[in-house]
Length: 150
Image (cartoon, rainbow, N blue to C red; front, side, top):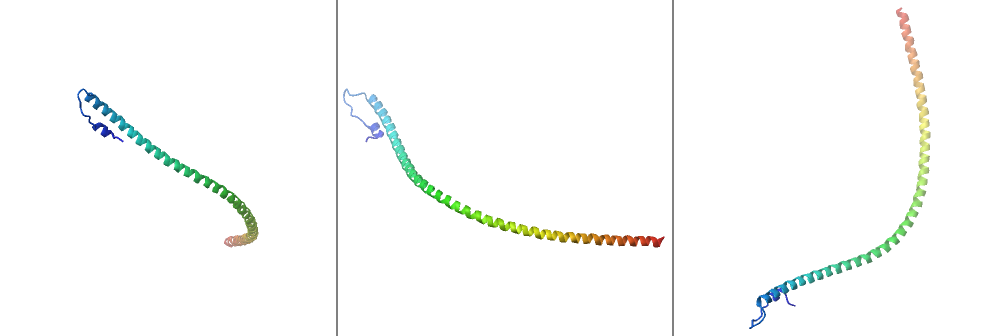
C-alpha cells in the first residue's frame, strides 16, 4: 500500500513533450492529501469498529450475566418470602408471649404500686393526725402561757 509520503515524493522522468510537471506535482500533492485523509478516516473507522465490537461483546456478556442474575434473584426472592413468612409467624408467637408477660408484669407492678399508695396514704394520715395533735398541744401551751401572763 502506498503512503501519502511516497505519493508526494514520487518523481517522474521528464521527457520531451510530456505532462506539465507543475500540474502533475499539484495533482500528486492533492492525491497524497486525499489519500492521507482516506487512510486517517479508515484508521478511525477501524478504531471505531474495534471499540464498538468490544462494547458489543461487553454488553452481550452483561446481558448474559444479568439474565442469570435475574433468575437467581427470582429464586432468592421466593426463598426470602418463605423465610420471611416463617420468621414473621415465629416473631408473632414470640411477641404474643412477650406481650402477655409484659402485661402480667405491669399488672403486678400496678398491684404493688396500689399497696405502696395505700401505705403512703396511711402514713400521710398518721402524719396529719400527729401534726394536728402537736399543733393542738402547742396552741394549748400558748393559751396557758397567755393565761399565766395575765
